[in-house]
Image: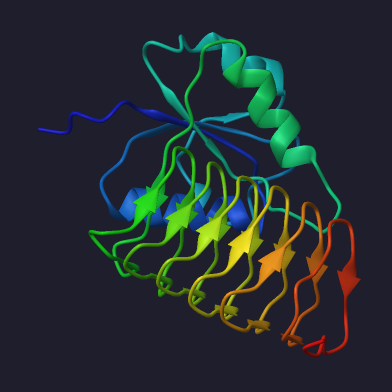
Length: 211
């Protein structure tokens, strides 16, 4: 018997489709997809109820459903955070999503609303903050402390003991060397290797060498 609440998925783009694929594969009940976009081109949404306005979430009581934020995170964007806050203030909770083929150590901590996608690895002692995305194939090594609303893009590698503040964006294939700190709302570009701390608000699109 499925003891989980039914889900309402917010968003109809690529990230939302990946989450829907994971959740449907786990036997979860998605009662509605909220998106202003036409969903016909995405087979994963076939047969799911489609509502077009965020306000239509309120058709469902917070006691009866949980939400899934399917809005992808872009550098410098706070849309994902603002949508979450809007509905958290109304009493809704956001589902934590962990793909069946992700590896999450039993000694790691995954906070509410985080999303760990296919092939990702979160190792022992690591902490993944609220509503953070660890995207497909990303690696979060031992003892990393990842803040809320981070996005760790596909195949990014965070070596052991890294700490990040809120709203950090780490691009696809980036490598963060051990023990470094990433400041609030900093951006690490795709494929970049970071060997020194990155301060808040800084965009690193070339290699950052140790000082």
